[in-house]
Image 1 (tube, rainbow, N blue to C red):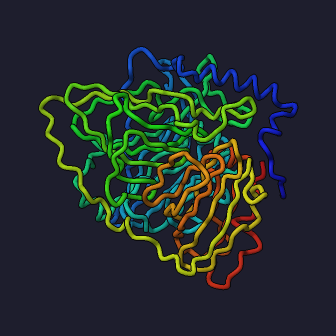
Image 2: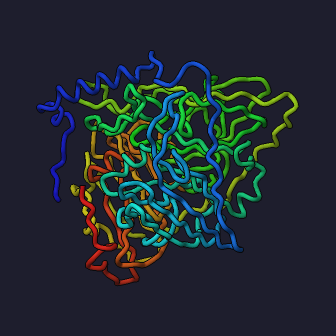
Image 3: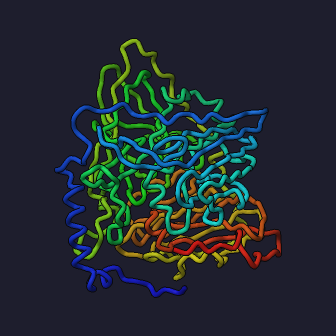
Length: 508
């Protein structure tokens, strides 16, 4: 389906402006920095720590079992909300594996509708990737297997049904997948899960008066929420027992970007991005994270002190115009996310932070003769096309890296870009004055309006003409509206199969 490019200002001058303006005004009132999001205030609640999944290990083979199920959760204090989760009512356990492990995950769908499970950031065969071509119908079990080739990193898993990814993730289907290797073994950094090594799953929601989730898409904003949550609750609090804490931060929200900082503007160390460790730590006082991205940070704490992890307003509104025609993507919002109490006086002193984390992260991919491709993101399309489950957009018939140039062609909308079965280095990001963190190996990159990035992309080479991988905007409303394409990896000179996956279209 071919689409004309859309000037968003012209679009909002049409008949939808009244509806959009009313919705935007209500949303602005809910998100005002002068108001307190619902569920905040009062007594803080202990930060829930997702449990470590109990797998069955036999040598380097490990099997996990996940049940997608419905339940009731107290996202808001003392209010029961219907939610979805894995092996529980909301969110999922943290899976762990080592580089070289042979992993099998048996996922049983105990919901009353089809879903899928995608291993975000993992390099693996297309048939195990868990994209929209791998539906799990109610009552069925899907059991993908693969060998872990990723280096140490914080990955995650979430649904990917065509047209419904945002809704299923919003209801709570998400969890972390931590990979370890010899490099992570060698570093003197916090590694005691749940004690000084803490996953933080950031989301946001809207609620009806009775505490049920508001699942109505806002005009052009989808399921952008007004109430932030951390690990599934509002008003979360963490009592530190050590002087240094490692937070593995995941933005699992549908549409919201967060500008992470601490209440006293203290510096903290960034040690890893989406796909693994940086070459060396980077000290910052704020850090932007967009939907689908992960950052690992180290924070030093003094005994007896109290600080708050916040999301502050974005400088320059992330390049998004502040006018009557542009939706409010929430870049002016400020939220408290997590209050933190320092350790006891007798807590041991933290060791020196390693000056070098992963020397291999300095190595640049060999881009001599690398094929180059161009992707133009505009509204809900990529290269003027919306997602078609049976159309192959890119064929890759070699093992080496490629250069992908990706442009946000909208002057007033943000986007971001995620590639399945791949990691990439950001070679450049131009066309914007917004400072976007791009260090290290990543799988998702944020794109302010007008920005163009060049990516050196390394793929997992698993030739299969019938099983495609996705690339898409990870602002899930954009993805679900069609801002997604797919690529096939084949042997040199090979061609895609006439039927992709099982042949389903799963149109919405």
